[in-house]
Length: 486
Image (cartoon, rainbow, N blue to C red):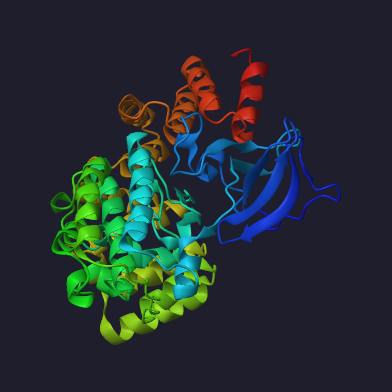
């Protein structure tokens, strides 16, 4: 099912679990409803993703939080899965937290948020506490910005984990929200890192926290456009814009916003410890002041293209990026251009453009590396195995240990009927990242091809534990039962 439209039933029931009360939001990712849980009458928030045709694990926003102890600065995630009995709609049940976003408060200016530094920095401290909690459970947030921070009286909570990923999953997930990009670290945009390990992903959150704090105390962002973020164009220090910022707070923000991830705070916990002393110093340094209204960033071609991508207007996004590339030869514009055609499913158009500018694709830069990965994905989509084989070798030269690339290499080995080699590589990945659904599913397939039905059935059972409601797994299990294998 690939429907993007959700219309409640006449009785406003969602399966056997919820009665829908009120639609709280309709975003690019999905709908959020205030709902009553039928089992106990509790009010909860239920998110219904629009991309219902995706596999369950791709829709599992914030899944590492399920079963974790509650944290006061993070919206609880209670349950997720296909809602019984029909199991048609995938839903994510979360804590219902009546609030407004920090972005809404900032947009109102002094009418919405008149704050002393103590109150302002208290809001930020809670955001850091929430981020530190996520890091402790092994996931980054990936999308820290005012729109994803909920405020109610003195309580602040992080929400919207659509970009949150476990470190080993980040290779297979891309950033889809154009509004996010001005809060992103340069390495996330693709300007500085050729490989992204778990620590760098956490350090990217620290950069985003620095952008948020810079925004709060200066009423502006360090950068106005995606291109500036990617190049880490020099920007004024916070104290240069707002003289009421103390030197300790200015130095704290500067460390968050360093270009090299290793030069930032080493962890969210370390950042939190340092910030508490900085907060005390700032309160002693300056009198109460009103928080200024954020000026609107200048919208350049990159911001315009990313917003079009967010809305699903891939053709228009491609046209904007293509016009920029033709006038400036900006490699970031070329990357956005071919990403847009790829995401619309026009793989041959994407390949045509990539093959027309091999100089850009072969550039020894992180943008070149991103283009080589995109070329690999496009060739696999159209089953041009020879070209995919060439590009997987190039990509593995760029990032030898990237799980996404090793998975694709295993797929190519299987397409070449080199099943034993594929199985060996997948088993190595499984030992490194046990229980990952994408690896387990491929192990089922490759052992089926090798006629090793015992191992295929064993990995299918492991896959079903990880993704219990996957229709593919249910169908495969029925086939195995018919053969007497389970």
